[in-house]
Image (cartoon, rainbow, N blue to C red; front, side, top):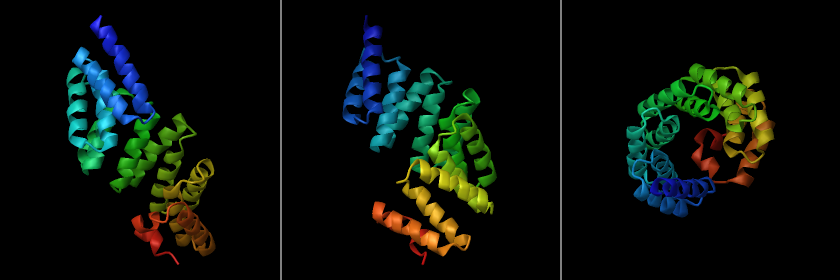
Length: 220
């Protein structure tokens, strides 16, 4: 009966993780692993919970063990990529996302994650290619519009970039990052009034954001 009990406890822990109840998730997932140490699902879910809580060493340990148990566990690969991102290791991040997408090429979340990683690495053409696929698979993916908009802007494709950033803000009016990127784009396009309006919205939503994004804070 122990493996069945382990699955039940692990699923309860996963529900806690999805709901953002990290302490409860770790408690139940730890119990599931005690009941069945070979349960990779519980290891991966606990690893993802540790990553969100900022315990990167524990996250790597759990996700690595999950992948020892199942090297083709695409979800665990993609979640470990987030740990590498937090560690500033873009090479390992992209490697894990590449493996995850080789296993699950039609996974919008992993496509967007790799698109974001490529954008952060300055590889905007590749980023747009991944984000195109993510949005073809899921046209409601708000952050994919924002990320693609930023890459398009850096490629000089300003009209397309503005369409994407407008779409992201329409879908999520309080999307501070998208508003910041749109403010900069408005300024580049010679639209100072629109840029000032976006900066004002950001200031109302999250005044500290203007300190985090230097290119926005210097806008007139």
